[in-house]
Image 1 (tube, rainbow, N blue to C red):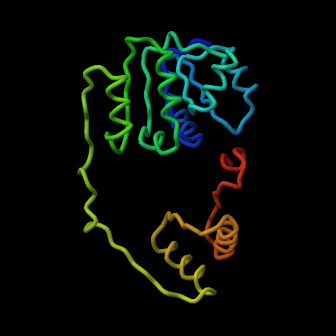
Image 2: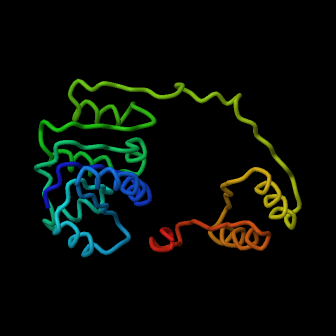
Image 3: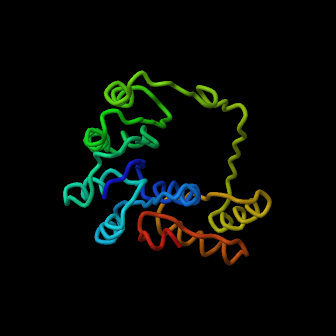
Length: 211
């Protein structure tokens, strides 16, 4: 119940992705790693924590629930990673993030990843990082001239055939729809066109998302 490493992520999908990427490294280093997030049984998370954990990947909401139920303590955490801090701010998680950071070791290493470092994020840096080293990757603003945009006006009945033809030529593609129903319908019709398609939207359970 006393992890030494903590990684905070804004969404359960990102928490799972991080955990998947780190599992093999953790295994080689003989470290245990688990993810905790909402949408699944908190009892299961408690059982996993009872077995012991070195690195905890967590969404702030579920982690605070576990802390309130005294399922773990963060006093031994010596390094914290706050991933997608700008998105944390957009989702209103920063007060919970600050509360969590205050429960970790005072001399911890705090690593922060963010698309922006102003506003609430700069406050997070001032309050929880000591003489931080800043690394920037990529241009400060994306070069929109390097992107090509196309607009095709087609009849309603021709939308899926046109999309299917484009996908067959282009390869892996994300198709956005206006509604959940539209996502389900587009997925079904693309499958009928011979394209391996799945739908993803807020109406799906965590198990459906994982599958």
